[in-house]
Image (cartoon, rainbow, N blue to C red):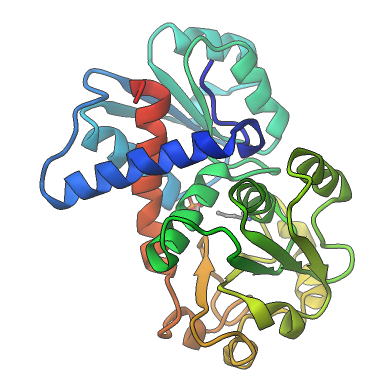
Length: 305
Ligand code: CP
Ligand code: NVA
């Protein structure tokens, strides 16, 4: 079955194919020629956590591909009112795709195990693969489709976003450096899995952001307090002191380096207004690429493109 739970399940060729379809659809859209590859198809969307970009880009993406999206409310009570397996079996008999934003990554795996239609990860505590697709598409827009040998430097928390970025970078030959304070690096089990999957990957761990950004083509950051970690907020804000992406840090990066952030951004915390709104920032085109990258993914998974 065609799912998208983690990009670790995808080959470089498959990822490249998703981008081929995404670019084709984006090009057609710019000419006013929308595709109807998902005509009469419906995506059911389940959110255990808040969302702006993911919800709108999936819903709008389905509409632009000729289909529909249903956003299920909390009344579904997945795993409470009814088991994950039963909810999935019911949905799979009525709609052509299921997308879920969840806390526990294993919940997505359980859904995929019980689904006869594609299951898409719209963010879990472990991974955010759709975000990584849009992020790399934004780098492609800047540097060309072949990103081999380019360097993405992630400054901040070794979280779900960093994890999916590391995977996609490894698969596509992009060097990945993470600068994180002690205790907030990517979990070693993730790193071991990525390195086993892509043994030749250039993966660097660095404790000094200024040193890390030296060779960057893209500098990336995300919130220091992910959804579900609110009780750790004070501890985390203290731990990440010195890891803000600000004008001084960007002065250490090459002048061509772009700045990325998955958003929502906490301005003045992990990133300054000056950097977010500065000439190097690509954060809004990056957000808009959520729509385009996911349309490519939906067309491949549900439309057989
Ligand atoms: N970047 C991202 O996934 O944004 P939302 O949480 O608003 O969907
Ligand atoms: N790491 C963040 C990403 C939000 C899109 C979170 O999980 O809250």
